[in-house]
Image 1: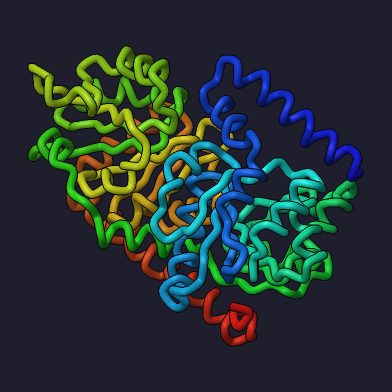
Image 2: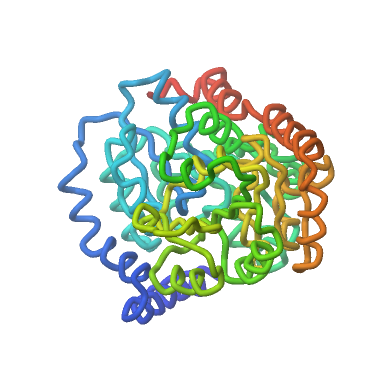
Length: 412
């Protein structure tokens, strides 16, 4: 099984190399890992005590960030190393102020893992949610370095719980403690014999509440919105945008803000063609007419955009799964999303509690908007969404307290 895993890693690299010929993101993935170990060796100081945080991408960074910041506030002398798997995380957060070092994660091979761990010498390692890399876990274990999973989330259909998942279960055995989001995850681990777990919730709730309380104003967006009711569509994909375009035409009194998940020029042009009376944020100051639709053509602004909204739509639900619904709920907005949300506990909770809706097509979306035209209803649902987020906050403090109370953080 390990042979197949290693073969899969090399096959993935080969496919990325092919994709890099035409895809900028793939090219960045390759470029960022060129001579990466020598680069790390030239940067890292050997005398520092440090903690290693690894994130798959930007979303996982925002999820694990509250734990990082809680530790840094209590132990400001601690050096922080951050690694990313994806360019979308690295490129946005490579200058993150609380990190001493930000690197791409070298490909998961025995040599890379062994050399990387030797170079950074972490006191502990913290991985977020779904990231499991066999050789890195083995190398941490071989060096007696505690490994923690924060905001862990497990489902019955994952390889860990299948007959062929022996290698994946071995990865789990290298984890010192799991801080999981829900009781199901805890029970699934328990069924495999892993008792080193705690149900602490999702640390992302802490992050979205902090974002909402420290929001930055965006004058160009504020001017665009004026006194209109505003529909914010965040992290959208083409499947989302196709049903949002006729919605904008059917609700001409509303302003629409579209913040796509991918902002490459080809995608932005496709959105412009869908939404007739639209303008890009980068061009809004030059617009000679008053547009109904504002297209956000940059990354990293979405968490501040929700402050201008009355209703939020979160994209991804017509693909592999929805994006961050907590972010919109933290601003007290009713949240709408597509049908593929059942792997996301917060979305399930929000639907059951009432302030969120899953829609299957344009007709359902239009009916929900008719319902949400009522200001009193919007206000009631928005308050329920905000209250849900408030009740779920606090996981980061619980996790860091656990580390201290169990003398795990004394390694610092």
